[in-house]
Image (cartoon, rainbow, N blue to C red; front, side, top):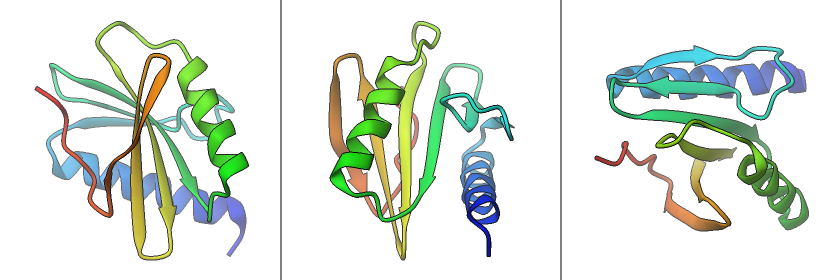
Amino acid sequence: MTRYSVGRRREQETVHYLRNEGYGTLRAAGSKGVFDVVGYNGTVVRFIQVKSSKARYGSLKSDLESVNGAAVPEGATKELWVYEPRKLTVYHVKGPRVEYPINANVVFTAES
């Protein structure tokens, strides 16, 4: 399986999860932008970068900095979803700080 197909599959898994949680979704395939998936439910907008690798600290740090530096509308969330074998870790980026991780192995639902 190519790296592209693995990444696409992880993005589709993310979209599937969000849709099951009641979100509308947009997958920005091939956009070369920071975010791969956008989820929205009428009150919350989630901008998500999806990674599917064994992220080493240097790579993870770079990915988190990229997400942190991206502009999003006020009130929207910025997230990094890292898929590893049998594990999903979600990082919620808030301004200059990152919560490491908010919940490993279980994806969190949107904040109220």
